[in-house]
Amino acid sequence: MSFLEMTEDIINHPLFLEMQEMPHHGGENSLYIHSVDTAKCACKLAKAFHMREDRVRAVTRAALLHDFFGYDWQSDRHRRFTKRYTGWRRVTHMHAFIHGAHAAHRAGRFFELDARQRAAITSHMFPLAPFPTNSEAWVLTLADKWVASKEVSAAVGWQVRNFYQNLRK
Image (cartoon, rainbow, N blue to C red; front, top):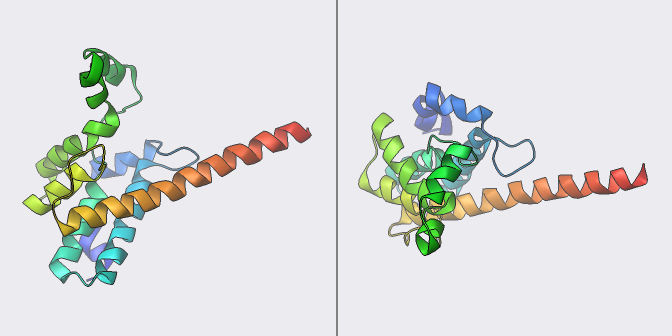
């Protein structure tokens, strides 16, 4: 089964398409691009690890939905939500800690997910999220870290190049 056959219903969903307008990891990257790249990486990793075809499909779809949380975490509204808490509870209600659970819940409202996919989405931010408890969760966590590292490195490189180009002017 091809990547597009596994994911077409998600990729073409109007709420998923809205993610094209949401910036992510700096530079010119969007949440949509990050999610598609993470899903492609997870698919390749799952195949490389010789996972069964149904589990390759499951982890690919979970990876596509891992950041389907549906809110602007940099907005004033989200900042006000976080400020309702103090001390350690404030830290544990920051976006990095909670968005996996929000994404799993929201994805389950629009797409059919099994328990392993929900667990993978919820735990993809390990160690800031729950410990991954299945192979799909570990593959998704690895794929997300890999893709995010590339994106952040590219964004930092872009910033450094701009800084030095501005010095030369």
